[in-house]
Amino acid sequence: MPIATPEIYNEMLDRAKAGKFAYPAINVTSSQTLHAALRGFAEAESDGIVQISTGGAEYLGGQYSKDMVTGAVALAEYAHIVAEKYPVNIALHTDHCPNDKLDGYVRPLLAISEERVKAGKNPLFQSHMWDGSAETLADNLKIAQELLARTSAAKIILEVEITPTGGEEDGISHEINDELYTTVEDAIRTAEALGLGEKGRYLLAASFGNVHGVYKPGNVVLRPELLKELNEGVAAKFGRPADSKPFDFVFHGGSGSTLEEIRTALENGVVKMNIDTDTQYAFTRPVADHMFKNYDGVLKVDGEVGSKKAYDPRTWGKLAEASMAKRVVEACGHLRSTGTKIK
Image (cartoon, rainbow, N blue to C red; front, side, top):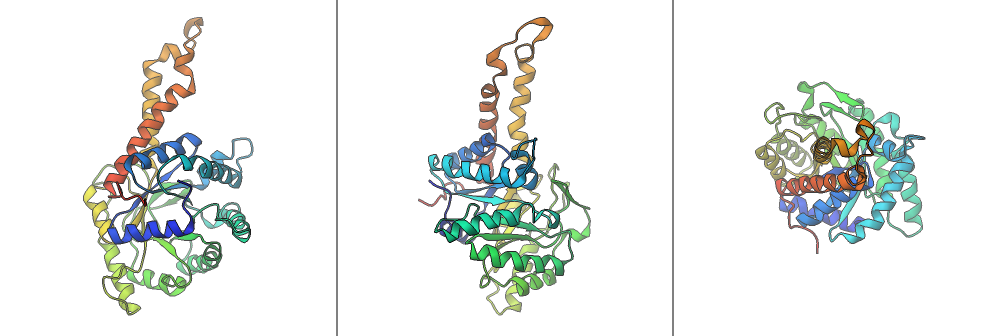
C-alpha cells in the first residue's frame, strides 16, 4: 500500500483510540532500518508509524553535509516508493524537534508539504513533532499554536510535548525527578490554547514518569493512570462526558516498561508509542554476533584475504533487518495492533 493519506492516517488514529490499541512508532536511520520496520508491520498485519528524529535526519543527510532536511526528504521520498510493496498503511512522522532546530528541520519540511498540497498532492510527512518541553508552558503553547495552524492547513497532524520526558535523546535531556508528571492544569492550558480538534488535530505527549534510554523493568516509576486523570479533568472543564478521552496520547520513553504499564496506558488513550532503543539493539545485536563468529573472515588477519561473503554488508545486513523486524512484530503484540490493519 502507499504511504497513508491524511484521511487514512486519521482513520488509523481513530481506530486505535476506539479499539484501545496503539501503533508502534519506529525510529529509522537508514533504508535498511526502514525496510525492517515495514517488514515487521507487514508480518504483524498492523498499520504503523515510521519516524525520523533530528539526529536520524542528520545522519541520513550524510556525514559530509549532515543536512537534516535533505536526509529526511530523501528517506521520505524513498519510503513513498518502497512502502507500496508492503500490504499495510504507514504514516511518516518527524520525532523530537526542539526550538533551536525548528528553522532547520520542521519548518522547512512543513514548507515542502505546503507546496505539495497546493499542487493537489498529499503532504510528504503525515505528522511532525514539536518538542517544547524545555520551554515554559506559555512559550511552548505559543509556538504550538503557530505550528498547528500550518500543519492543519497542510493536512498534517502535529505532535506536542508539553512537559519533560526524562533521560536523553538526540541531545535533548531532562533530569529524572517529580517534574516528569503532567498536571491536570497543564492539560487544561493545552486544550485552551490548541483546542480539542476544532483548530486542527494534534497528538499529546504528556509525561507520566517517562524516561528515554535503557532501563530494566521497575527502574522507571511510571504512572499511566495519570492519563485518565488528565482526560477526565479536561472533559469536565469543557463540559464533555467523563469517558470521552479528548486527547490522543503518545507514550515516549517506553523502554523498560512492563506490559501491565503499557496496557494501562492503552486503556487511557495512548494511540502511539515511540520505540527506538529496543529496535536499535535488535538491529545491532546480530551484527555483533556475526562479526565475533566470523572474525577471520571479516578481517584480513595475518596477511590473509578474509572472506568476501563474510564482510559483504548484505550478509550481516539481512540478519540485522530480520532481527529488528521481529522486534517490531513483538511491539505490535504488546500494543495490541496486531491484525488491525485497514483492509
